[in-house]
Image: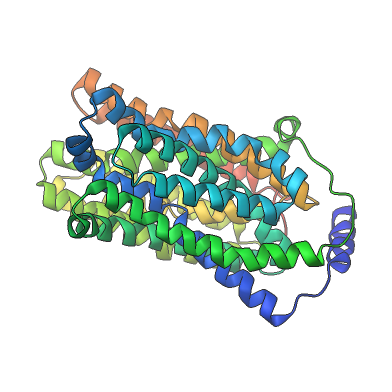
Length: 407
């Protein structure tokens, strides 16, 4: 009752937004979503060409793909403090400036600039990742599910489109560095699109005490621990799959083209899956069944990958792709959590910074175990166990005293 009252008072304190301000916020949300994975997938598609042209060795080649998740963990941890100092909108604007600068910096044909640009850009991306649930809560308090769905769908769309277009673009420009740097132009559009939102928020901000909520003590609360656990488990599964799935199928006997097709199918299914799960989870009493459905799909998909013949690889691809749809569902829960925007930011900081740090074990551990055993049975069996753990945590998370009502 107290949380409902405080939420109502907070909503009453906010000035009513004009239709133009709402439209600006939606446009900015879409532009940001298009950028939040584009810099990662675009660079991944050009890493081989960048290494050939710039001439860096295997150590640098192995470090570059690990930079995003490490930045998500380290830079993301500072987001709660940053939003407490600047406010959510100014923190996001700063993060978009860092993202733009970093991505453009990668366009300079130098190994040092590639590394520096990746660190700067991914650090900006980390802050934006963590702050977006708070932005959605602040600006779309009664439509968190819809706006989170729109945000995550545009994120996947931007990632997919960039990974497809960046190689031909680099060939057209005659340089992989120019191709990866050109992704920064998309970030420029997000910065310019969000600038009016930040200025509007600055001009119309109600004078109030904005307290900083430290994220780390929240780990000792039931809600903080469970949100961190579910984010960690889904991120570990996702990054392990996204890093190794096509390579795994190729080493099992599929051609590179067939493996790529299965990988595309997995990613394609995850987009409508996320929207469907948000639609189901937003209905009264259906949040727990939505988590059961998506976690069960991941579990069955892992088992299918272990036991089905390669000729039926499309079945685990579809099931695992559906299982990846858990991400927007988790983001909706984070957006709804907390009695204030500061607490939501703190919970998002805790879940994402800790989650991404631990998720780096996924792709690294998969490769290490494959090298040690010469096969994929043990790595997949461990992922299967993690999928079981995800079901248990989802069950605990959606208990009535933890889950939030429809928003």
